[in-house]
Image (cartoon, rainbow, N blue to C red; front, side, top):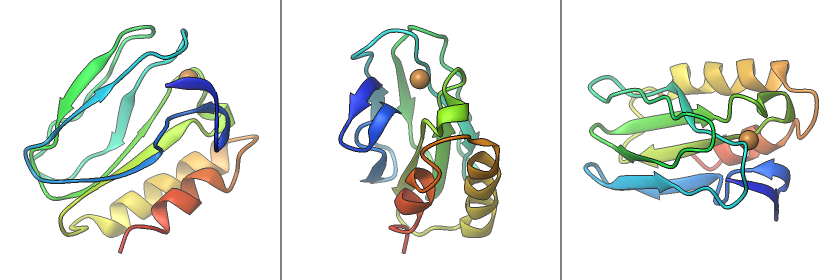
Amino acid sequence: MKNSGADGAMVFEPGYLEAEKGDTVKFVMTDPAHNSVSEVVPEGAESWSGAINKEITVTLDAEGVYVYKCTPHAPLNMAGVIKVGEPTNYDEAKAAVEKLTAAAATNKDRLTDYFSQVK
Ligand SMILES: [Cu+2]
């Protein structure tokens, strides 16, 4: 969770990640005032809601696409995508990406670029 990265200001890096079922992902606080909150998780996986300024470790319990955001920087499209195995919930994840992108004022291509890597 960074104030500035290769994909611009207020950004998760990497913003797109492929992982295996059962892996854990730790959201690390490089800069302050961020969090990680799931927007969509596959069926059988637990959603998460990290507090501002708190690192959080998430276990990816199910195959599918996970879409998450940083609450205070959602208007800057600070959000990311994790793919685990087969994208079982592709349509639901796509809808979440479109909703977050529509609500964002800047970095409009960021999340759709991440999601375009989901195959
Ligand atoms: Cu943030």
